[in-house]
Image (cartoon, rainbow over all chains, first blue to last red; front, side, top):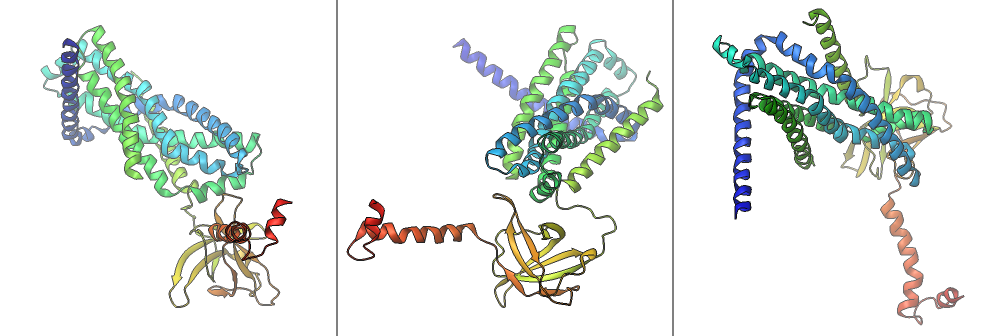
Amino acid sequence: MSGFKRLWSSLIDNIARLGDITRFLLRLLIATPASLLRFDLVLEQVYNAGVLSLIIVMLSGLFVGMVLGLQGFQLLQRFGSEEALGTATAIGLVKELGPVVTALLFAGRAGTALASEIGLMRATDQLSAMEMMAVDPVRRVVVPRFLGGVIAMPLLAAIFSMIGLYGAQLIGVQIMGIDSGSFWSQMRGGVALADVNQGIVKSLIFGVACSLIAVYEGYNASPTAEGVGQATTRTVVTSAVMTLFLDYLITAMFL
Amino acid sequence: MRNSRSLSIGTGLFIVLGFAALLFLTTQTTNRGIVFGSKPHYDVTAKFDNIGDLRVGAPVSMAGVEIGRVVSISFDSKDYKAVVVMRIGEQYNQIPSDSDASIYTQGLLGGKFVGLTAGGAETYLKNNDHIDFTQSALVLENLIGQLVANFAKTPAASDSGQAKANPPATPEKTK
């Protein structure tokens, strides 16, 4: 009986959390126009979320692309259509791996930084101090970080996909000896603009989700060292699960 | 504090790189490539009985070299044929006017493309000309259908009634 009760209360807790996050999102969206006037703050967060994640995203993209190139080549060789490697890797990267892996990396690199930064501000009463000075901490601290993440994420995903394609090309064309002309021309024939658009929509939605979860967890962290740690952990876990769940949802919607 | 100028430069570079990657993905991986100051070209039309799954953007090649692309596909309701408009680069302006166009498949699983074979006429194709000699796409289903029909003739006859149709089929098989 107590197990059932605990399950029930945790379900209620999670529903309440979902409602809280949604209300927080509305609050952020209402504060967004005012924050856009201080665009230098947003730009600084684009630097924090985007530029500082660039190296890890580019490196991961290169290796993911190279692995796709190797695996795809092995598989396609069985059917004697190695030239389709370009199409296969491009579709795989642009539609799925680019947005999803970038979102996971983004949650790990930028999301944790956001959550722990805002959580520490909460723990050290910096947010309360702002309120005392009649500065809205949501407008001054949270929204710029949220917008920075939302702007950076699609760009990071696009960079990931592009680097990944060159990684696949490196393996397929330079090492395995596929003709480079047919690699690119089959890709051009096989990838539709709708595929690229799907990837962009996905990365945008993942960007909103991951940034939102990070700033929400940070903003609502318990003001202790332990609380900040928990907020950071929850950010990564929730972001990863939400990314994969949303990925399924969006893919099903686009089909 | 971080130096604000290098911060701006870093952010700017990141945004430029990001949009360059987006541009690359939308133009270079798809067939919607932006042609900067479109190259000189001319259009040629051909009518096919059946184009299979030829699509707009498919290459037009001659001797295996890509010389143009399919720019539009429409249906002629008068003679029930597919009208394919091909855009060919101006540098390939010496294609004999009696050349023939066929639809081929790239590899086993590849897409369809139009292949031109040179004729022997002295005049060359010009803008808005027609290619009169065309050969339709090989539709795999039709081929398999014919194959199955051919196979079905002999064994089916031996199964149902040996007395009726070609009796040599049975000894042939048992050999």
